[in-house]
Structures are given as structure tokens and as C-alpha cells.
Length: 356
Ligand SMILES: Cc1ncc(COP(=O)(O)O)c(C=O)c1O
Image (cartoon, rainbow, N blue to C red; front, top):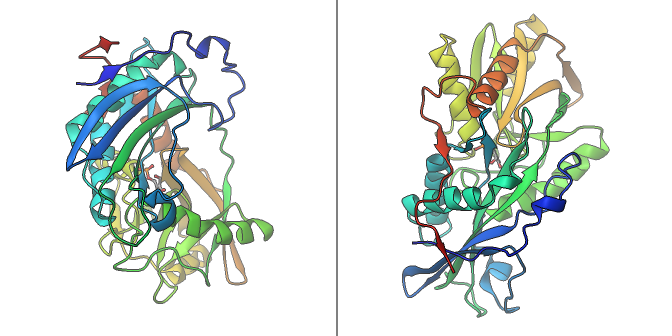
């Protein structure tokens, strides 16, 4: 059971929903659970606010820190819904296992997300791709130096309103020096350190005029992996191709899975396989490369206008028929305007409301 301690005066009343700066204002409440003596305890929702920690807290030193990112929206008739929370729960535990952290019960994860969103449902902004961004995370909280797994952890969920996402097509730089993930590493999980390691290459790519890095494999710098916080799709000769996740070097995006499911359902040929940057270059030369797009919770779909590799730039300015179609489809499902035939929406309602 989740104990709920509500904030006496909610903050959404004074929040300017027409000028949302993503990630700067948090919703009123947060979910917190503590792991001690092998069990999750003190399961609660309380007013959002600072937490105290000891400078020797292990997450700060040895990086046992994982997170998730998902969204809640309101359907056209006002029902708060969360997009595929069970999949995020599973991925959270996948990350936990790889980082030698305790798993968080998946039904409790979903219950926590749905209760928190129900409590803070007034924070869900309205509009086509506006949403409440939900950030579950877990950190090691033992207070001791020395490299080992922590015995204590904190699992928390915070939420932040995200406004309309006016995404202009992005320019990608295929990175031929830095790498993001090698086989046997942690590239397939949402470990905080993955993002820290991507910052310097991203800064350097920005200086060269690119929005984000397209990662290539660590061994040969030959095969395409993913982009910043997105998976990547290519349409070549009408076939939709996305790098396979078999080698465990790519985060298995939930939007990626949704796109594959929708497109296959509509009769498109979608292939998950190794794709070399040379094949992309050749397809661009032959005129068979019609679309490149990224997929992720943040923008759903981001069109790619330019891809640079070594000294070449592959420019695309087609219709982006497939990218536009899937983005619209996902947004319509989230707004309840299209049948949710894959059961992706999870209504945010409170089952056990204990106000203390
Ligand atoms: C590295 C990385 N790849 C891909 C994605 C896209 O995943 P999803 O569609 O689940 O948001 C994300 C975002 O979570 C990410 O951080």
C-alpha cells in the first residue's frame, strides 16, 4: 500500500502552462521507497522536495544509478493515461540487474506511477504532444567508501510537465572516434553513467554544427547503433530498417517497439538487423534512402535532415511519409482518438488512497 501525504497548497494553480521550460519545474508530489535489509519499505507519496544525503553516499562515488523516462497524457475526454508503464517497469529491472541493484516489483512500479500521476493529474498539460514526463530512478544510498554493491537504495519517481514538442529536423554526426557502447558493457541499460559519457562527444558535435551524435559500434566504427536518447530508423527501398538489439549495445526503446508494432500491423516491412554506415551511404547515392528518423519518449519521432560521416553529408528532404504516419498514430492513440488495440494506455487512477 502506498501512503499518500498531499501537499496542502498545490503548485499547478500558479504554473504557466503556456510557457513550459521542460525539466525546470517539477509536479507537486514524488514517490519514494527505501530498500533496506533486503526489502522495499516506507512506500509513500509525499510533497516534492529536497532529500538529504551523506557525502559518502555510494551512488555519488561508484555510480550505481539508473533511471527511466515515460509520459502521461490526457485523452480528449480528460482521462489521465500512461503510455506502456509495464514495459518501463521491465526495463527498469533490466537496468537494475546489470548494475547489481535490487529489482523493484513491477506491479508496485506500475501502481506507483499510476497513483503519482493520479495525484498530480492537474500537472498534465494539454495539447498534441504535450505530456507529463515521468522520471523513476534508483540510487545506491549506503554511506561508506570502498567499491562494492550498496546494501541500501532509494527508488523515487518525480514528474515534470513537458510542453508541445516543436521538433525541427535534426542534423546528425556519425561519430568515428568516440564510442557509446561495446558488447558486454552497459549500453543496453539506462545507467546514469552512459549519459555522462555521451556529453563531451555531444558538445564537440554541436561545435561542428550538428544536433546530435549517431553512434557507431565500438569495434569497427562500421555499424549504426543509436542517437543520444533515441533509437534510429532508416527507410531504404521502402523497407524500414532499425539496428537490432541482439548484441546488447543499444537501449531497447519502447517507442522503437511501438513503431515496429504499428508499421508491421499496417503491412510495412520492418527489419531489425545490423546496418552499416556504408550501406546508408550507398543507399543515399543510389537514391533509395528515403527517410531517416529517431524514436524516443521525448519527441516520439524526430526527422533527420542530414547525416554526416567523415567528410560527406547525406541530405534528405523528402516527405517523411512513414515517420509522419507513425508519429501521428502514436499521438492519436495517446489522446484516445484512435483505438488502443495493443493495450498500451494505462489509466491513472488511485486504488488505495490513504491520506495521512
Ligand atoms: C540511449 C537511449 N536510446 C533510446 C531511447 C529511446 O527509448 P524510449 O523509446 O523507450 O524512450 C532513449 C530514451 O530513453 C535513450 O536514452
